[in-house]
Picture 1 (cartoon, rainbow, N blue to C red):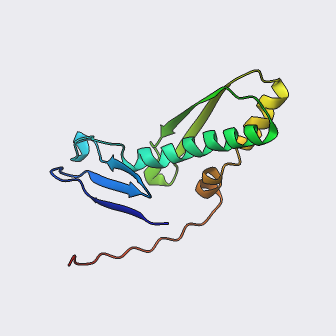
Picture 2: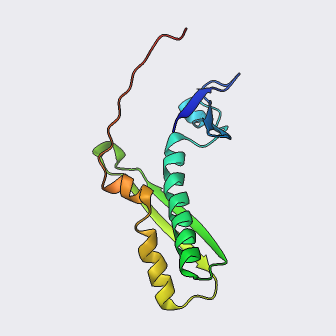
Picture 3: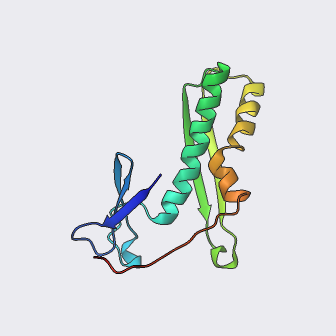
Length: 135
């Protein structure tokens, strides 16, 4: 899969982001030189975790026949020690439906195992970067 970005026309920093058939804008705050026209890269990183946890829990609940009416996911970021190599994310999933305590515990265990959580905590990611002159 390929993710492509191009500078958003007329914007100081914003990037038009294309993933398959989906488009959105990534930007930074005015304090960082942008116009805050979209989520920042850190916001997208955090949102990936939130989305993965919610989707993983919904997938599992559907597969196991657990009646989940809704999931509200909140990610709280503490980036105060990021420069020291510590980036803290706290995920809170509020699940509604007629659930037993055992089912809530089961869904909590599943949320801990979402693929993005694993990527962020247990996988070594190798990144290569090249900068080229545009044609």
